[in-house]
Length: 317
Image (cartoon, rainbow, N blue to C red):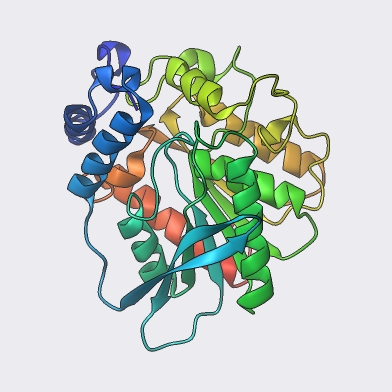
């Protein structure tokens, strides 16, 4: 999430409304932040999230709780449509590079998913690095999945954004042929080939660069961490069969976009259902631009519609 170094080839490629959003993010989260201690980075990020918070839509109630895990509790926030029973539950894993974010950072997004789908949404406050390196976040995601599968009685849709998309995919692969009825991943980092595709073409894209990706990965990873661990990098798995119907939405001007295409191809090759869509002329983190940038609003509407279809057991494409 570092600031734009120079507009370069993106000067005319991105529309003025999106540049206004990028400039606003950069004003809240300037480039020098990534060199600060992690607690300072979190403080700046949290202030930015509060500034972008849109409030919760009417008709959504939220309550906080804890999921029991081995030796600790995992904070969760449960969003429910007021006055009616939900047909499905969305298990949501927030973004933030595995070092930032929590229940408040994506609160409005989760509430809007609840309102837009009529489903329950559970946001998971998994443990963050560097205090808790891999596999702590994955273990918490698995524990939250097990809790939801055992207690909700509802069909489950896995959903994650950026780092959270990594967690959702890793959980889907670790629990294949089990409880999830679908998964939707929003510009996920899945550990793809960094020597080709969007990693090269958009290495210095606004709001996320390959340098940022390496920084977050290094903070998340323990010493001697194997890069071939599929719970760290889902694309390093050898088996993509038995996965729930999968929708991946990425941004064109984002080094991570090729991960979505590759993941789609691997699932389809293994006989599964997967659909990948690259949102043209958008950047990483465009969810926060959904109220000011028409293309981001359209992308978010597609995300809501796809989650709704998956939760009903329908294939949206």
